[in-house]
Image 1: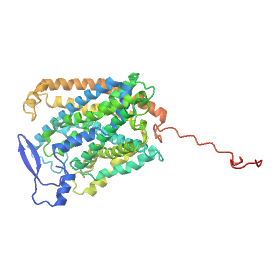
Image 2: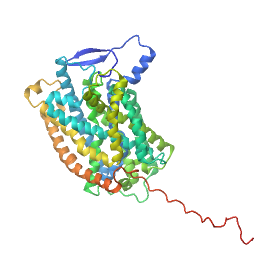
Image 3: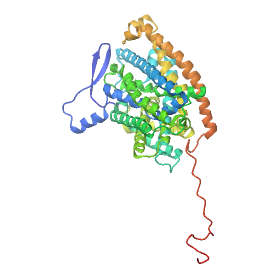
Image 4: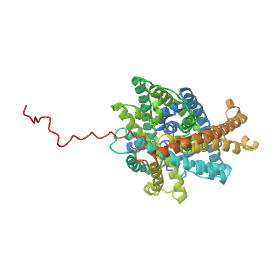
Length: 486
């Protein structure tokens, strides 16, 4: 594995070469502790990484989407896109295994090289597919990192509003730059676990706090009211379950990548236990108020429980920033010939330029909420839905390719015919509904945010400052002064 200092042995399993760590008997306590916290490659690590990466700041914008979609559509879209996302993540895992198997039959060694999605496309379908995949994947991950940075500034403002959100973006940009020191997804073991625990707390805080708060006086649930808002909300949910742009990197960090097939589905099922109760409860309590509050924290009164949720979400967003940015670090390292460098400090240093454009874009477009839908419709739709579905069809279009495939499609979906029908449905649906209607709606909404708040806005959706109390006339007598001596 790339960036894996652990001794490994090569094991043949079927037609696929897997990397398994040796269990050294003479490890001291320090080495064992480091291995426990730092070196993760099991199926459990992959599950934590997938679940932790899939739901972070988007948890806070889903009630906003429900106010745009209405309760029924919000629930149905979560279930529908959760299923679609799990299927395309499965396709990506199949294509990864196919690519790696073919390469290892050619005696290619990936010990110090992290396989990425664009390389899978290149190896299976050629350079044109590679270029398209690389462009969409890098742009999506770039803006995915931007969104995490925007979310950090948006959240901390609800604890400390002495600084505006733009200033907080400067501060958290510097903090998130420290992710350059994490070599690969193999080293996110403890972070993935901690991140998911933090998000779980936040999700159940939103649920319980909403139920205890009750419905606000005169609450209205008028969604869906406008077509633009409807498709904007739908594409935010498309974005929510499109977190598998880093699937290949997570798989490559596993000791047995073939076990990944159902992991994303299991992660999605857990994520739904967080996103559905929280979004339903917050929308039930606050209704149409959410249309002007894309961050759910804005509607809850300050309390120790809310502040704890904000702090935990901030830490998790730092982790998710690393998830989104690490593949970009790999691409940059490969571009400048530093990917197989053994020095962690040298690699960290050359990674720093990747963070600068992310920092800059977060300051230009601080539109927490609307930017999710825009990225979802224009980038996620192709990156993790359309391209994987088409790539699967074209990779296995010939009878010989299907016959020699390392992994055969499951029987319950109808083998190859059923798989191709599902793939075509995904391409058509996402192209029309996600990219077409969703792109139109999210761009209209995004432009509206620019017209309303402007680029480089200092404090997006911040409450207006309280008017300064009127000064008492300096010449007015003191209340304790009695001019007539009464």
